[in-house]
Image (cartoon, rainbow, N blue to C red):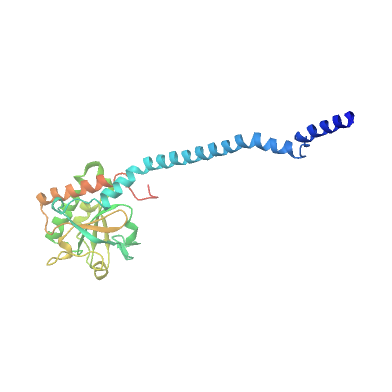
Length: 251
């Protein structure tokens, strides 16, 4: 009996203890996930942060490089000089060069739009070019020459709007000018004079994108030309970051 009681007591004590459960077959695998997955997740987060920071740095670098172009664009197109500072009249909306055929004095032909890529200082007159026309051409040439090194960024253009031929005596003075004959009626759909004036009384400014954007007052004299020069200098400074002498693709 005592042996039986002793066995019963041992069994009771054994029953009160937690059983020794065998480890599952995948326990090692779970342990491996617990130990190794944390560093892998941290590395992924670190990589994502480095990638994001790299993109921010690249964006900042691009903004720094583009800043001069953006600034000149804003200055030229958005923060234009106040009206009282301009001698010339800003044209709004601007008008793009039309698809017109033009004929040079040597009878060669070209599209008028081929003049794009340079600032253009334009005059319009009949080919016979009497005294008023000659004064305009002289003032136009002197205005361009007064810009010094920046003069190469502006083309001096005379558009002849009729069938008359220029006097032979003008040929030496026109060596640096671009002289083209165009249809007068079609030209009038692009350039326009101020109310009460004629097309030939003004000088017109066209930007490198081929858009007529300024008209200088009629019948300028040398004193007025100094005011026009200030307008040109401001525009050339504002566009210096994106405009260079010569047309793209041409030497």
